[in-house]
Length: 83
Image 1 (cartoon, rainbow, N blue to C red):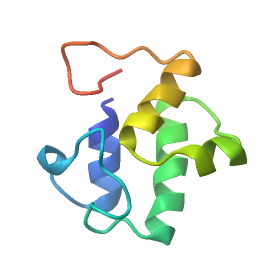
Image 2 (cartoon, helix red, strand yellow; image 1 turned 180 degrees about the vertical axis):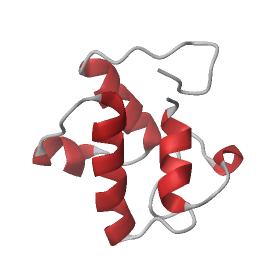
Image 3 (tube, rainbow, N blue to C red; image 1 turned 90 degrees about the horizontal axis):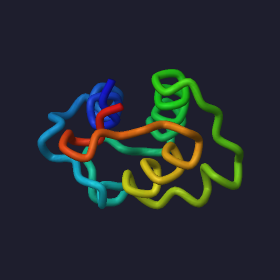
């Protein structure tokens, strides 16, 4: 499952508008409630758990991808943040 697909599904937006720089300030529908939903959906989709400090440290989708990699999720270099 692709990270962008999970995010787009929760935010109800097209995956094409997402980038590693996407965050709550520059992405439609990304508010505080959706952020919580997003964290839970990503944890479920990738079989990981984020700590509170990790959640606070995530400033954008690139940070989220980096944390996922640190938790053992591998992403195909040729695919858009796919696992």
